[in-house]
Length: 109
Image (cartoon, rainbow, N blue to C red; front, top):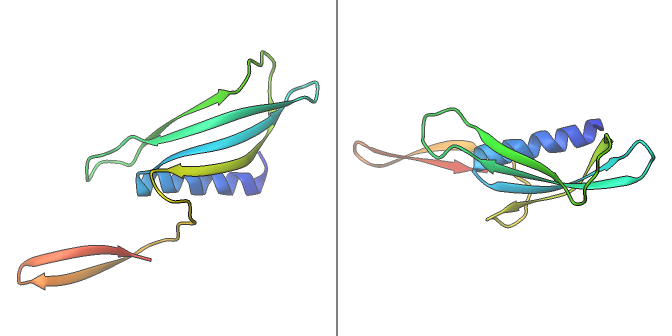
């Protein structure tokens, strides 16, 4: 896989795990005879309980049956489900003292 595509995939995985959003990505690959193959990657957050390790599950499915080996995978597109498409940036955590003994932690950009 191309290094820039690897960084994009790492970012997508981080968003799915941290933001708890599903993601769908288009992947293209090349068969040994040089013909293109198109696949779809689905990533789903798998953790809904607080204080447990972050995990996710995924599926890479071809659009058509391809019995041969595939190589040269490239990321062609992606989107997040349940949220308007945007670039996520690391969040800062802000602690707000609302009332005595009551604290609110708010994630801000």
